[in-house]
Length: 223
Image 1: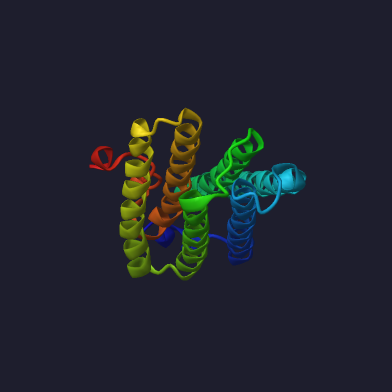
Image 2: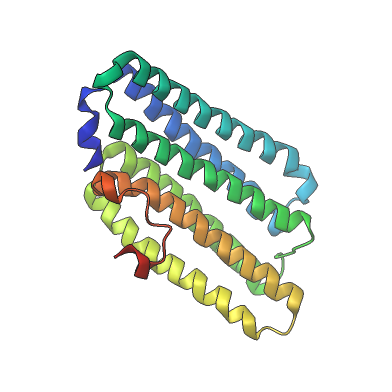
């Protein structure tokens, strides 16, 4: 597993980066919940827009902080630098940062007028908000514990999730109401991307380095 490569790193620096990654996951969860609330019209999009974008900027700052620390680490260690370790942490931070960007995409959808506050749409938003929140929590726990068995279980569950999102997205081709169909299709596509980026984080727990960060490919392209 790629984390076997970290043993030579300075413990204090590794612990700091680990804490920042965990914090990024927590913040992305909050931004996503704001976006879900806006789509469900529990709040108007403009009421949470500033806070959501502020949290996203904080995620970006942490990602840049991690990159700076890794560059300093490389400069200090010179020829002894553990390059795979640097690339793994950069990859993980980038995937989490992308989840924050997708939260903005979901909010943009609500701000443009998408309304999922009625009937089955509201039920789905509430269900998926809970599913994604659990997925983020599980990702943080499994990543922190280096739980390989848990990672494999969640990765398999995530494939089922994305299959469901894709089927729902394609089903919108048969919906006559174009505005509703576009809203649902984009919503499902964004959830697919959130799931894929979170699963990329977990590949660091179970995959060798050369297979890291590939879960956002279609299953057929992972072989």
